[in-house]
Length: 136
Image (cartoon, helix red, strand yellow):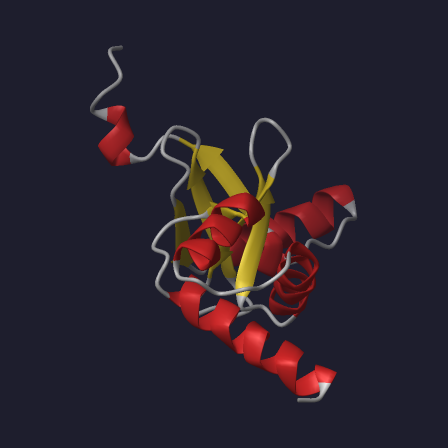
């Protein structure tokens, strides 16, 4: 079997597996999942595949408070005007497609002379589910 088709097969396996992960995951967690399903895919292939999937807009990469990279499968990011909300407690990521980002983008450009990439905005906070567990 040629090396290219081997990598393509492994990339397809990785892509199919991450589609079923409902929350964010690290490379370590993805490797453990693949190992548990008896896939023999090396870390280098996983890292390269995740880089390709990120570049293609299939996954979103973000960093936790310990600066560890996590990824989230993004199933609908065709819109230029969207952003993400990340809960700092449960680490869930919510994809938001809302025109309010247009106002923010316009403000930043007009007042601060900076053009933002609206496809890569992550706002952190506490989701409603986690908020109910926090005593104020």
